[in-house]
Image (cartoon, rainbow, N blue to C red):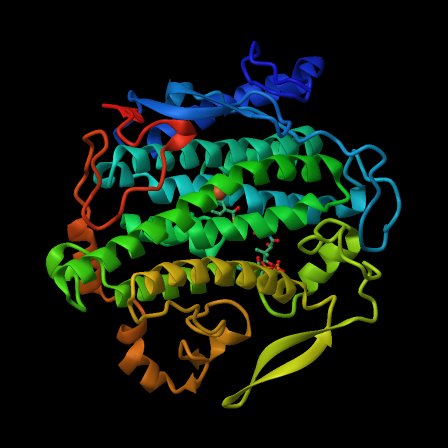
Length: 470
Ligand code: BYC
Ligand code: FE
Ligand code: FE
């Protein structure tokens, strides 16, 4: 299924065959464009950026690269190929054919999931809009903008579903997605992490590692959905998501590498005086971003999650590939819970523990990335290890929101928390210091002093390529 680029809205869903839907989306489009001009990347709207655009949705080179002004980016509607004779992989409709329309009784729940997913996409663009001015290189600037335009496209993906399958209330929700604003006191974005500021590039790299990775796990569980258009759209979004997480994993890795280089060069434990970011401070940023990101999985025990699963709307990570009954009517799942001043593992009904189950899949993936950074620290001969804090640390959602937990997993008093939080989370002064390092570097092939250059360029281009034409 090729993508039709002759249309006003590029798509592979034969939009031209449904005049009403096409007109409705064409009416939403100018609102999206003015949102992009108002809330998209500040200051670079007229600049040419070396971006990839989808030309087809199959694995063989779905992307084509070229210099594009961001407002001219061809945002469109791209669904992965349908799987022939696909059946529902879990829940009470297990084994039945997948749905091509929304069953009336599940309409509200499904709309809510789609709106929550859709809301995060423009939120992240809003959070990152000011970062262009302080980019560490043209390579990084281009990657930021690539992520931003793709998050804009992810919004299109959810808006398509709302318009195509939810009638008038879907169209109203699609309009509201352009009205909420990240961090707004009156009209905030829906989920916590998407209202936090992303004040500097270290925050941004942590965000793409930790928060975009929540995207991967949520999208993967929605890709299992019985509602086939949602499944197909999420499958294609996941191919884009991989690049976002690459930016985070290699980006934080490059900061770590640069810090190690400075430590060795100056034979110093602290690299702040040499324009680097101490490993201890990187750890504090990591603590912050991991904790706000694991909040995004919701409460440990959730009837919402149980219902989504039983209805067939949202599965587990790798649901189809799992070897169990895919119903979870009897199954139990071990959940870490707080019992007075101790943490105990308790067997809970697996159906209620699905948020925790997805958080576990996510945590394993995060630990893999951290281990990779640690291998680089070790290879540099430096005795330091980055660690993921305990899942109870600094939580605002679920059981852990009610207790104070140190990164090592010990339960502490509120007074001790107040006394010690500056050991674990970046202080105002430390954030200001990182902010002071953020001086825009825009000469081709040059990189800021706090981050190492990447191993290679984008799409086989050299590092001094004009990724952004200023
Ligand atoms: N902040 O039963 P519970 C991405 C609410 S990231 C604020 O535990 P549930 C991306 C919850 O809504 C992926 N509120 O929740 C990344 C509920 O509200 P009500 C985004 C929260 O429903 C980077 C109440 O607390 N996609 O794509 O089981 C850049 C009780 O909670 C939060 C999705 O999230 C929170 N953190 O699970 C760009 C997928 N957590 O009923 C993009 C769709 C919970 O009391 N969403 N609440 O009003 C879902 O599957 C679920 O809504 C959640 C929550 C997993 C988020
Ligand atoms: Fe996204
Ligand atoms: Fe993303």
